[in-house]
Length: 411
Image (cartoon, rainbow, N blue to C red; front, side, top):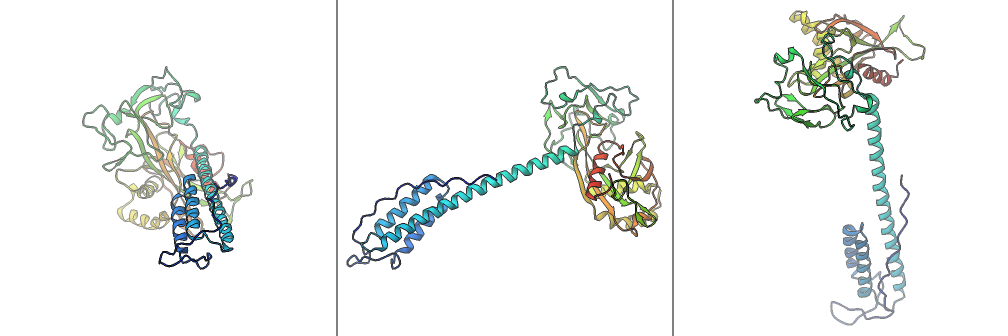
């Protein structure tokens, strides 16, 4: 913390005459007396504290204190009594105390500034350690185009919008199935009827970013994390942020009724892992947050659809499954909220997610008897051991690493 400020010297107090008449405001002759018996002591306390409370933090305020004290001493305490010297000493001590308090306030203020700065730096480091410069959305080809749609190459030092890149002219691309106008997709920005509220909740559509406000350039939202080599919406339905939710469902790996340990001597954590039907990559089960839907609802719905294949269950089977999972999905802990380095991202549309960890710590819990069945957008599902060797879709590996660290598990 900053070192204490040196005490400042007091301006000189008004000179006190050695002998002066005491004015008796109730009539009668002036009578010398000391501070202890001074019936006007209340005036001294009231006048000094009013100035202290309002002016103590300024040089002008300290001068006002001196003036008040000097005036009171001249008017109330000018006496031949020997106690006048004691009064002066007490006044000087009071001023020293005021200066000391002011110094402490200055130190506390500087200390709070230091704490806020340090806290901000820690948060920035945490954020940057989880979401690094996006890489997966700068590949040579846009996904699901049979390598027919290419991205403009963006070097690492040109990713930031603040970096000069005069030749940057990315191709505009929006997938045909998005242009067909499905219910979940926005119209084209050129459509006169389309008047979105950027950086706001637009009806039942959340157009706010989890991170910060994004810029609108030439009528288009701009990806806050920099250039991607392609403009338009690509395969994403919304301009700007597209919100998803990812449930990370974990349990301890059990072998012969014991927690299995890896080379690190730490217990091995497992999570429910699905294989995406569109890319074949392994990933956390998850999906898009429907308009007006609560994230907690999305988390449970996507897990049931992709990891339990509830879409092919009977109504009764689905209800039984929901009843079993309801309590379990109420105890999740947020792992991440923000931008995702998704290969579908463009300069004008990008993925953001909220990832929650739902952990089963008891061997008698529901997860150890749960039968997994791939469904919806998943072509396979399994319990996957967690380790640093994982290669997962988008930023999912970063989320899994954070979960492993949280549980002090093998990585």
